[in-house]
Image (cartoon, rainbow, N blue to C red; front, side, top):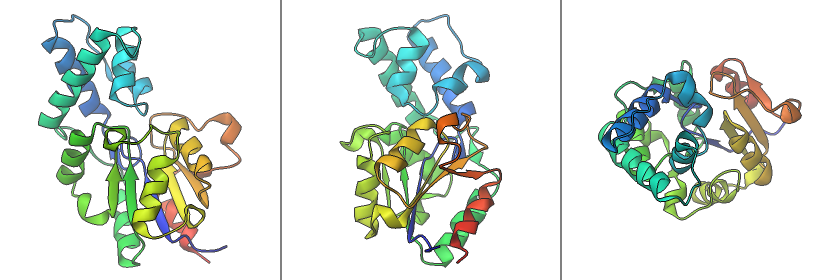
Length: 219
């Protein structure tokens, strides 16, 4: 087995347990716009991974282009920038993996559906920024996952081919983006917010523990 030359990570549900912050900020946004609706953690979890605009659409039960959906999306993004990491934290094993990869000189990047300003704040608050060559959100001018564009841009920035790179995520969007980019491996973090899609179960590297990712470095 050829050792991977780079790693690309999703953020929420993969590196960071952001669900409590997403819930809190969604509820702040709903309150700011006068809605009585409030989300529990269980209500919020199915909406993680598709981006804030999709979350707003799903929560309101309205089309993506509806004025109320757009207003909730902008309120959520603005509030998230002010409360990027009140509750969230890195999942167990994440910092060990990042430290190990950094020590080996293996470049890393992040691709996320999180709004760009919130992404910057979260990565900074969690101490993750120094590990990364690049971090991208759709707001940076790329289509959302499962389109492979953000992954391919990260590969260009890291100076590697996608075929030498591991994509690590916790949603169908991440898995399909990794396959679309023709990554060397696509790994699925089982601590995340979705179950591995059944049709891909035998094609992904499943990670019962996040540190299992380091097994890919064994020749």
